Picture 1 (tube, rainbow, N blue to C red):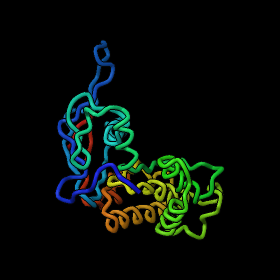
Picture 2: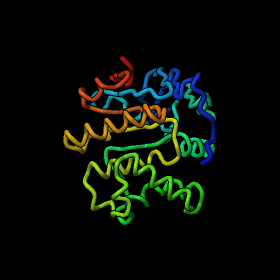
Picture 3: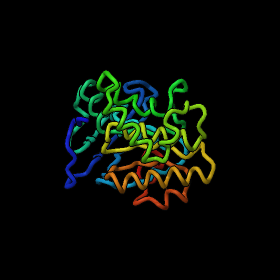
Picture 4: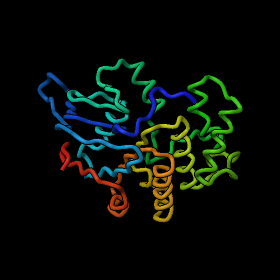
Length: 234
């Protein structure tokens, strides 16, 4: 599979400098919700983002995921400055360098586990090749679900569905994985299992991970923790 940029271990995978975000700009109710966010993430680094509801975590994650633009500041991914890129370039960069795992798995219920994992690759290349099918099968094997490849996603447990979602997020070999409360809907045992899987993937594949969580026990197991309160990093 091709990628947009090559990973260089000597530079941060992600770098934010003075990121600010305002809403309703120019109106009487204009408000700034992110106030000068600065941090970087190195290759294979596993970082927790914690903070109360309404602290700006979701806004920050949307900006890091190139789903929204900052009002001010600079955001670089693999050394490429993104804030001046057009929409098409952002879409391409996001598709090939960032994987997303959400609190709810967002699998397509009519698809099998294998078909769900194949979906990003098919969308990128326009067809389902034998190579794509084999990569999807290998990814399911890496999350322990190869025997369930042909199972419809609705027949899988919550923990299994989230593992399929992780495999799908890795389909394009992203340098950065954004995990937004991926264990929030799971029981304690399944949550720990999904967390351990993400840690293994980060270590073995060199994937950098931003892990948003309200679970202090899981946050304590990360390489570092970024605490966001009132739109600022403490």
